[in-house]
Amino acid sequence: MISRRSLLAAAAAGTALPLAMPGVLRAQTRDLRLGVITPPNHPWNNAALKIGEVLKEKTGGKLTMTVFHAGQLGNEGAMMQQLQTGALDMAFLQAAEVGNRVPNVAAILAPYVVRSTEAAAKLVRQPIAMQMLEPLPKETGTLGLGWGITSIRVVFSAKEIDGIAGLNGMKLRINTTPAFRDFYSLLGAAPTPIPTPQVFDAMANGQVDGLEADLDFSWNQRFDKVSKVLMRMDAVFMPMIALASGKAWQSLSAEDRALIAEATKAALDAQVDETVTNAPKLIKQFEGTGIKMVVPPAADSAPIIAEYDKIWTPKAPILPELRKVGATLG
Image 1 (cartoon, helix red, strand yellow):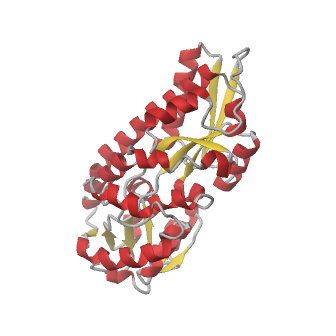
Image 2: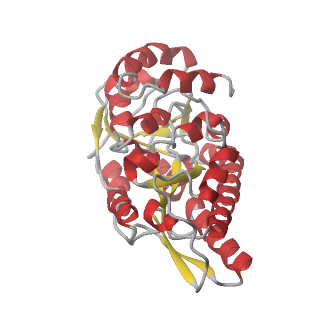
């Protein structure tokens, strides 16, 4: 396994990428471009801005960063292509997007690998999480510098339900990643992809019966206003990977690589800690609305885990090891 420390050392030296070129001395001012799909003031956005602040301060303004938020550069697939061509220097992409290209990365999206936001924070700091990023240079032409997280996801229902059995037959708006689709299909739900800006209205007009999302996004959108039940499944979360373009990375000096890697690590660590702190506060806010809160028994998950792993272990062989690690994290 590769440790976070050794990854950062490799990143600084440029050895994490195949055919890495010698470092190029910083001869002039350079503005790095970072893309992210989240809107301004989102924790991921704030982390990206923090990286830029540190780079500017540490280099006296010779190295800066412009953050393109809210999908200004296109969707995540488009940003991945820009990373591969070197048109984009960095991006914060969801594990779902990267997992579509590297199935072992999608293993982190499997249900019940962890069962709380706190455990998710611990998982992305384990050596196995960095090990999952090792194939990225070869498979995608990018370098994974670290992980960010969201709170563990919850399900909102427009009808009365008392547990995961209530998802059977439900038209459920989900993230379109195959990892989530397979999970909710096994529960009998009919996964229904709907563009994010249309989700609230889709719930309000009955186009879908329910939706799943992280706590931060759910509170910002106030899904409690179109729902009768909030079910805390404690099943899945959607982490983010900070990616650097391989082509852009090779054009940087070893000094700049080290600085970017360390600034990214510090910003992501702060983002992860903030998410852990905010999760219980968000639960309290939802409780204050009077929405019915449901927490299914942990035993309900065992049959689903077995069926899910039959599908995904052949595609993502790291999944059993990831489950073992997750089980130790509380």
